[in-house]
Image (cartoon, rainbow, N blue to C red; front, top):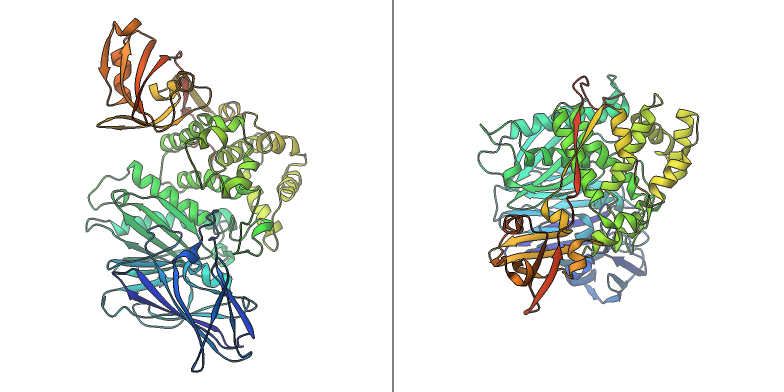
Length: 585
């Protein structure tokens, strides 16, 4: 059977419209097509069909009716076995890694946003034709799809083995910066949109090369054939640099990234910065996913169902363990030092410890609830749920350090799991089986306590066993009160109130505007305007009681506060005799 053919045009840059022409060489008599409701890797139903418009069908010269079956599915009655041509437009104005974007500066799309799925023909070859943008002669195109016949700017015909591959290879369009390197013999390309003229592309390439080589060797060993064992022949990084943004989405041989423009390395700039380290961690995270979720994957992702949620209780492993290794592999690649690594680890630990929801929800439950909780956060999220990213990374930490006490490592377990499960789905039992095979003992008690209960993790004891000193320090005033907030010219804007906190006891609520305080009995210590929460301790002095003056729905409230005793947070530090917290093994 001939390949299904998708021709994509940037039809109207100012209206943000892509035009797609889909040719089905041999249609069914009642041909059904649909647009996915979600994109793998981002666990939320996003209803991409809401941006599809002007769907038309034609067979020869005959116009056919497209009958909508539900929110994202259409049926066309036509002659079986003959070509059917569908044309439609997609509005593209979501500047994220998940959907599609088009304006006069840049174009980007995931196939899940643009490419209708032809029911019954998903396993057939699929072709993607990228048309040049005549109004933008400097634009190029980049994608992980295999080129069939393309010009020097990347426009032309690309091939995919099936629908899954087609929609797992996003496309970048624009006058982007482009660079290349080789990692373990594998060609890699990096394209960056939105960079400033001072952007240091050579440094980004060199540092990304170190990450890629470290991760390829993590999975396939340090031998000369490591690159030949990797699950891809080439790899593409697509980075969109914006004023304010962060995120990434993994794909089979590419990743789409977004970062703050100021986080890019600059020529003549400092060697390291917190923002650039964050970007390198994002690159490390998404690249690690090439193995851990795109190859080693849960049962629910063996064959994606694009019409509804695909539930798995294992995101704590696939996202959490990836979050553990992303920064650790930066350390092993020599891109950060011990102090920076421990600072990043400490940040993850604090995020878990400052989440009351860890006492309510297990990390396995959080994985299954991702569709309705993690991706739909509100003011109560911290009180009701725990992140499978951060707590999952802490589970990985505890497991790795426990293994190291017995002469084993999580590195080896991950490699063993890859060999055990890459031909089929991975289940929690496979992790338990691999742990027992490598150590000779059962680890069910640990997994039950750390993953399927709300018990505290033994991170402190295990870190100290590896020579990491834990210093207990005073927390911030906001943490003592149990608040998440933003400071503004008009006052302190309350974002969330933590369960069991002093702020909750006082009656404060999310979306309150904290305007001022009265100090002492009946305000005898004075009434003060508050613009920043950090001003309050200075105004209080030694007083522990005060009244907060709050605006809620334009009503003024007086809320009595008692400041709790100083709470504490951790600060991690490596002992002087250790060259690395836990080196590769």
